[in-house]
Length: 345
Image (cartoon, rainbow, N blue to C red):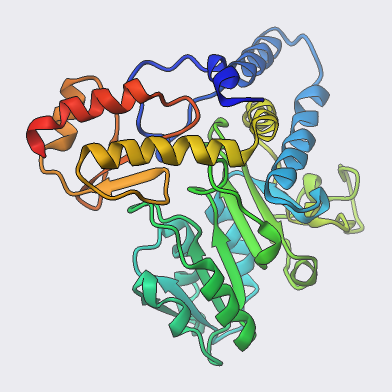
């Protein structure tokens, strides 16, 4: 599906430049969610149809990141999914993380300080060089939340493999606009409410098969069982990554499935080209060189106030304006923002 054809499936108010905070649902996702809410209100159906959306979402995410559905666990958020990985670290493990990392990929490691887990934070551009034989795990975001920077994944993965360290990535600000191959990582987690345009409460986690059997499913319940284990012993966990599933918030996945399937139909390569072109249009209007991200972070005092007065919605992170551009963003949205900022340049 071409971008021009797809954009008619969204109905944003002009000026939404804040997908890095949350994404806007396409019409198929919104309609599916409204139908499910109406079914719930009336008690019209069983939950089986809503539950089928979890399987559809898992399969669509797996396709998006180039892995098998059996290697993808589902949950509600990144920190919850990564907490199981953190709990599997040995006492005294050493973890290296960028110093600007979003806390969902930092706090899960820091809470284990009481058993000697050491967290070392370094500048993003020094991450690969900080990995040596003492490091057990390196964790980073594929795209940084605060700045929109693409992390040096190739260098980090190469250094980790050379020293036997595990590689854990948060792809929340990447999946949906940036092509991502999850199989390169040991663990790759992603919340779906931003660039995947799903309701908040759906998240996915690729876990390499070699690592999966080393993790204890600390949140195991009926959904982690083989064919949904309802009552009584013995423990019968799924053989696949489903053993790490947590019981899903059904309606989040009802909305996630159509959104993810649509992204696959459009193709992330097309979305990437569209999003980065709009980001570069914005950068050019501010006198900046082209970049490689759908997120633009810039120091413009008073920018948030000026944009808000013009009806443009963006964010401020770490004291800087953060504007983000996705499939439903138009050139008119970009130009409206630039006009609002004209006096601040």
